[in-house]
Length: 300
Image (cartoon, rainbow, N blue to C red; front, side, top):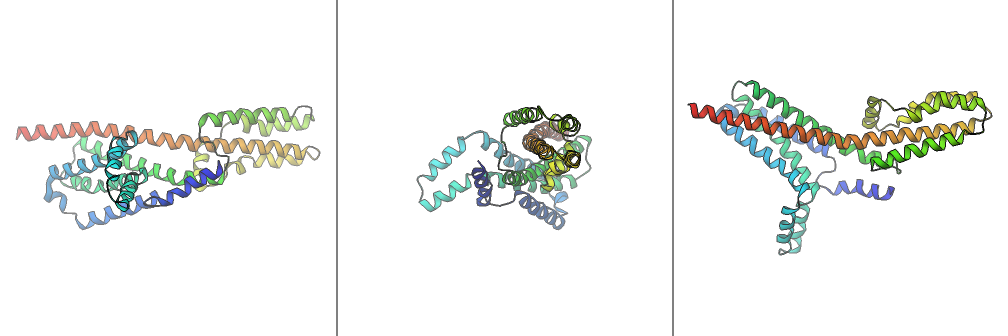
């Protein structure tokens, strides 16, 4: 399992860019630089042209979501590639990979901010346009958060070869660890049981603060080291059962790492749901914005 995870993580380096976060930063810097050089473009093009350009780029970026959910385009693209010379066909297959689509999606999503910026510079904003501005900002921010998760999770998987990829497997491991710990203390001294109940069981039955897990995800540190520190210090009071107690602490540390595992899995899914909900909300507000603009044109 560890080898497969390592291979999957290494495969990212065969993608168009090795770090999607770095690619996003390069695109954002390019947008900022181009806008600084073209600050007068927005008023010259006008709000209608800049709005249409922005809408078109966002729609192109949204094709990535359609590509992930349907193979209609991919099947026809590969059929066309099969009739071309091998060198060209290989490049067409590379272009159709999800890694390539994701890279293009990131670039389009960020470069759409350039015409959107021009659009915002074209005139004073209405309350609806301010809402659209906030939604676009949140969509970009959520996308950048997803990029960070995408870059950080493979590192977490490689550091922990026993990394689970399904939430139900994590829950099963929780139960197994708790049962093993409870069975381990049977028949031992009252002092061991007392310290176990005070220091180790709360780690087995409780939950680590989300803020601590989030910080551990960003820094790559093991959250179990700090969480089990107090329990390891309490082991000094058990000179006869210290080795056994250390084993119980190791079980608690494994459980905390599984919490980190579970947190990573939830984060990798939650950000995407949030991103999609924001995109759907933005779509609705843009429809109202366009309808209002067309209505205003009709009145003129």
